[in-house]
Length: 206
Length: 206
Image 1 (cartoon, rainbow over the protein chains, first blue to last red):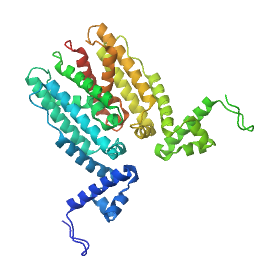
Image 2 (tube, each protein chain N blue to C red):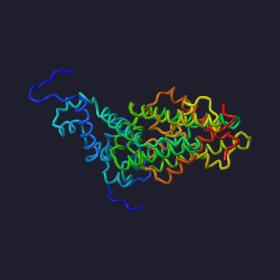
Image 3 (cartoon, chains in turn brown, cyan):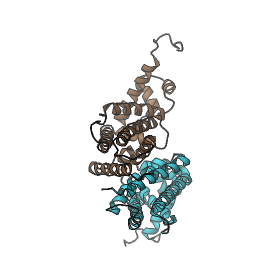
Image 4 (tube, rainbow over the protein chains, first blue to last red):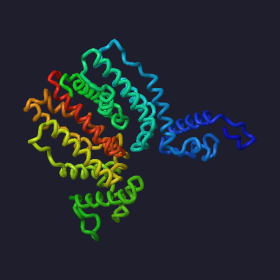
């Protein structure tokens, strides 16, 4: 810990300041629109110097990443884990449907999330990688269960889960689903999961 | 045809003016960056009134759509159609690889294309639907060839092509590929096509 620069204000833990910045930034994004809010506005709303905000978040992209991590963590906590009693193909569909609907609710409730995602399109966000890993883990577990019960014919379940996750971008990536009609997405979800399922069940698969 | 409003300038056909607007807009997007160019700048560069530009393109989104149509048409013309002598699984992979590489070249050569796509994320562009239909047609043809030769087991090739096209978004959608490393994409492309191929070859497919 560094020593406080000013004797007038008691120094707050950095983690608290960080949380304050995230809360204020997100509230401003929500109320004024993401593109209309600069880092300087976040600083002003908190009575902080812009330099101090930049000390915690080096750019708007870093801020977006930290806010996205909070959203993704909340979403993952909300997920009911697939029921072990169901057959793996059914579990896979339920898992993907649940995720897609969770994304859609978030995007509808908080349009600034879509703006944040579009803003960071093409930039590497650590949160995206984290989220992808979580998906792959969960899907690999379902595939393992399918292999155990003899329904799926897969050599490397983790690798296969990685490929399935890529194929699911069309129903899970915010840019590809945000403005699509709900019934079209529901059908697309069933169909793409069925395609993946058919591949996993192929007894001749190499 | 309406009568000319001004006796000083001979009236040009609307199609020519439209082409001029598209060429000038794209040149400005390319040199100044898409987000830095307003409709008024396009008008100024052409010595036209903004109202006249808006008569041809009601918004920047309409301009983006028209420019994208030209890019997609040029790209489709460049595509070597899959060789009929090759086996359908190989044809499918070659077709998708060719498309992906064509997208990547365009995005690299013309960064403003990526900016245009990000700008129109979540808006319905007629060009996207047109392009999707073209993909589905070509993939359905490959599937038909596979069914005829007994390699693929598919009831409705058009419907299956539609689902396969969705699953291919992870290697064909500009937002998902623009900033990805070439070797990662090459592997992803082979893997996702192999997944689709395994589904199509499943003799037990429903």
